Image (cartoon, rainbow, N blue to C red; front, side):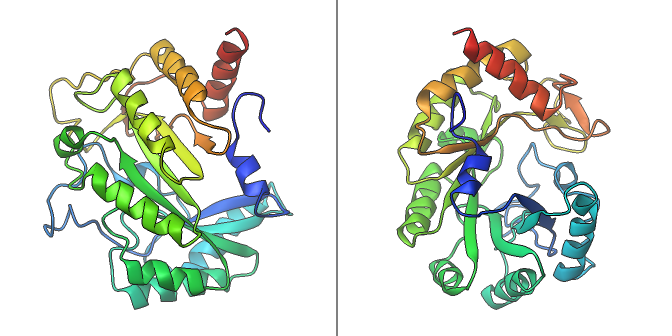
Length: 291
């Protein structure tokens, strides 16, 4: 295991004998809190451009996007195998048959050994979960929970509750599907202690992976339009100390996928730490060694 915590690479190694790379796929989905069904405007911190890579274009077929992704990563890693990552917007928020057809197209691509599905906890109907179990491939679901506090979720226009997260995680894990949970530290109105409470509650759920990052203020979002958006995760040293405390909380049975998000400089307003993910991890490991 990793020196301080279980890494995502170690989690993947439990399931595959090869190095695995996620390849993002955009199937043109939207979000129910963007199109008016449960809300409008989307999450106040979110812009899809911050996490969809250049090779993704919803106008392309799933197999074509994966071909471009394989070409992009294959230049450096010729022996890599892949997971199709349905990440853009809320991928499962569409007719089940259409989504399953996209998944089947993905797993038919040479070198694709499974799928990771990113979605909201209120957008995973039981019939879809049961259909995913029947597929002849490895499946993992990542739920965007962000916070355990319903007042915070309302403040950032998530339009779901922590109870929705608990329900989705439990239903998914009950079918034997690995679950990842995505959390954000420093959301408006929250202290880092509040975020630690969310981490503790998340670790009580049957999850396999925890994915964490600091709040980022991005151009074109509702948060960016506000005059001032104080975030308890804005200071690098404070956030490093927070992450060190997370290591103490998360059991070794749960892998930690990431600690920070690095949005394109053209979109990022704050915090501008000028650190790559591996550089942040290096700083965190140095801090942990000194504890």
